[in-house]
Picture 1 (cartoon, rainbow, N blue to C red):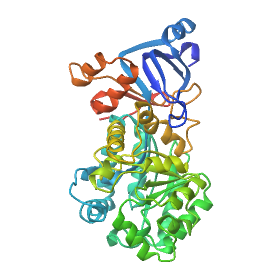
Picture 2 (cartoon, one colour; picture 1 turned 90 degrees about the vertical axis):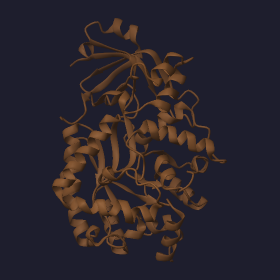
Picture 3 (cartoon, rainbow, N blue to C red; picture 1 turned 90 degrees about the horizontal axis):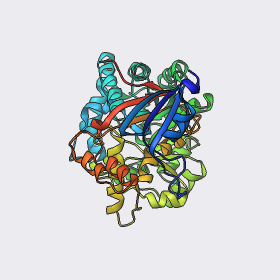
Length: 435
């Protein structure tokens, strides 16, 4: 389809082609905007009337009184934990033992894993997430099921088999040799295909022997372009145990550094309790951090030191961290980030522009995908979500009384939910699983 005969969507449009932590004008708003798409890519974005005059042959859809935002990018979540959301009253290590690990062991049943993968991917699309960095399962067939379900739904995932050989349930352990061989086969089958990518995924330092961490380094060295994801500094008890288990390491990050796992494209989840040195070293290696405010609060892990990450120059973006979190809504994560930063005496005063950036372009930048998506700049893939407030509800009432579009965006993050998500597009195609 040529641009002249493309699809022209009319709505109020928001995106952040810049970084609001750095640029005052990072948020762009088109109150009566036009988004022209063709061949799966964004051809133009500006005022609707001028675009319509230039492209009279385009097929026009009037989506008012709705809103178009870039597709959400979730940089940390766990697909095997979809059915254990709501395990309240625990701290991290207790929650893992009582809630997460028994459920993750069930992923050895591939049929069960396929059902959960469908529920998980459907949950992503229902909440407007178009790209997600996902912890897979400890089992190769279950991780393959996630890749294949994402292909069916038409969304983008970066995921990998979770690697562990100690300190968990024995059914969740692999030998380093099996971990290497199975990971290499998954990379061969899925990395760089159908818009999906592979992430080497050591669960966390406590669950990996030196031999397993060596496997992770080998996989990264042998497969350029593969990402790394793991956990870091989530809970004080966890950090103390890491220090006892790895007495030769400088700190928690130092465990990963010993095996050259801290590198560009690495994403370290949580990092609630970092040292200044760890922040400096993450920034030096251009590694990123997944900020998971709902999970951090639910497990009582602590306040994310956003100011300190900014000062050190460490990139970060939002993740839902199911099921220690509260669901797959990036709107909810944005609101929780705002609330926790307000409560933290050392917090950062987030604005609607910051929340949108952290839920979209910020995640794309961390994953090295910002040239392809993350905002609605012409030339990028047409990844976006169409939101509309339910009639006669509190969100619709707030929008009707908003003084300006920034207040509208604030209301979407405050009260928006999956009920607002009317359509999700990835590369121009409607995303979602057939029922």
